[in-house]
Image 1: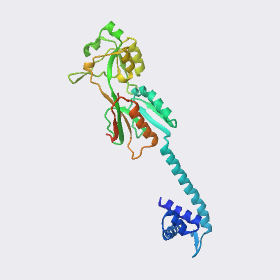
Image 2: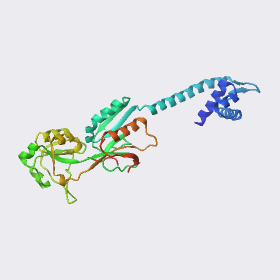
Image 3: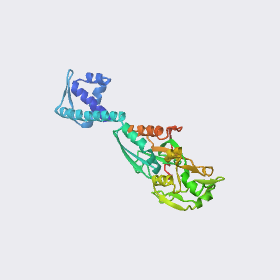
Image 4: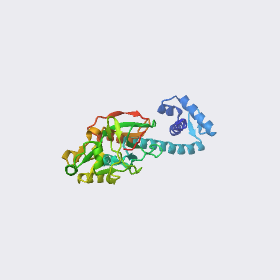
Length: 312
């Protein structure tokens, strides 16, 4: 940057043919301008100006150098203007990662895209453990307590996994009263696509986690089949309450065993720690903080975290 400063001094002297005029433009003395030019000539081992008591004229080498410097400084100015415009208008590719439950937020993401058409969304939807920085993600939405000190985080909201079934299913097979009763029911299970593991239902008694080898009537690695089969009266499923809000409201699905369920899952948005957020990342973080869980109270102050991703 010091070299660019000396080039700026040289261009102003070359265009004004005056140390005094150049100094006035830069807000420095004519003596300081003269010394800057002398240092530049010494570094280049080339005389750039012919000096007399009344005039300053370019040498042939100085004239050639002036044209080069004009182009260099013009490119720098153009780059600064481009960057300033970028800081005002969010644009460019935004690479984000979501857990499978994040598919529920696609309507909100579509609205974000409508609001920011110059941002290109690159969405990875997976429950696998991603390395935000090494894999080049701009931001991730994940569950669990963060533990990577290289990341910043904001809490978005929370949800519960609940056991649900259709009223007609319970009319036919009965309502389970204890976790053990599930062994006699048809269970619709979720399998994590990344690990192949079957989701353990969040059952506990007296603070102790209960684990059962549930009889599977159907297994799927996405939520949509579970919702469809449960609503059709084909079994009991365990799903995030945010995935079935409408069904719970209209009564096509009802929850059971709530007294044995203490599940509570927090969703956070995380991004690489940086002193300055890019405009595209800033508007994304601000948007998801308010749009995904509008009814929830938020933690709005970014903080250093210590992981970022766990399976649902």
